[in-house]
Length: 87
Image 1 (cartoon, rainbow, N blue to C red):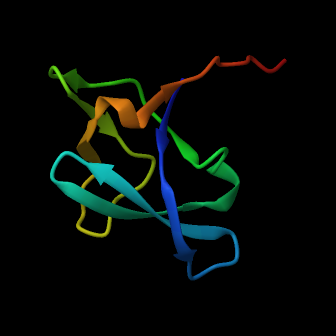
Image 2 (tube, rainbow, N blue to C red):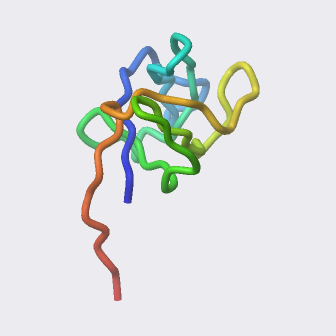
């Protein structure tokens, strides 16, 4: 599983939501995510969809404020974690 580093900006409209900022190759984007999905200042994202020397195309768990689901991020913003299977 891949995780994307984020910076918590503020609380969302609901108590279970948090607004986070994501560093992208073109600046930054804001996304509203479930507070429970934030672990170690990172959120889960899908496997990379594309890659260049320094950037990676990822799909976010929710749409950004500007309407994007997929964004190019610096590759060093991604963290690979072990996926644990639950019975």
